[in-house]
Image (cartoon, rainbow, N blue to C red; front, side, top):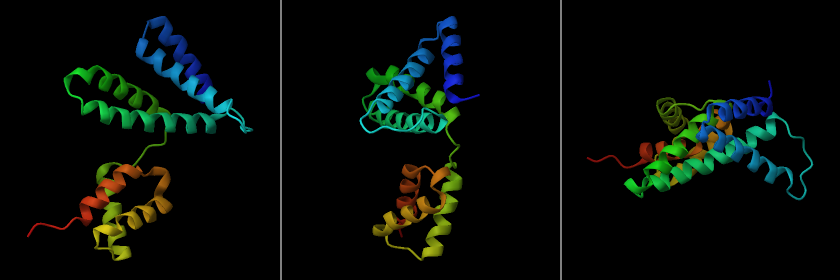
Length: 155
């Protein structure tokens, strides 16, 4: 079943069950897809690859927004909850990313392989990792872990 068909069935179910959170996120994905599809120069097909591209971009935006809302304290907790739901819900269609422990192991191996010890070379390290494992690696997580691993150790 295609992602489009899956989302259409999910929307019907959400409407039947009056699940506002699911209805909102599915409609937002369809809206984001419409923007991409009607953009000047778009010549592709509306297929699973396009849905994955749209969902990936939307989840990335929502992760950033969630982090910003989390810094606003208690008054923004409902929005943090809603964004967390959207991220978790849409993640089922995205390729699974490596965990923090797996990412840390990759970073340590790449540090040894490249012989990097200077924290200023974290970008080079992350670039190397993204070239070799980009599909299953969360770039933001890899960047954070690389900076932690390259940070000077207290003596």
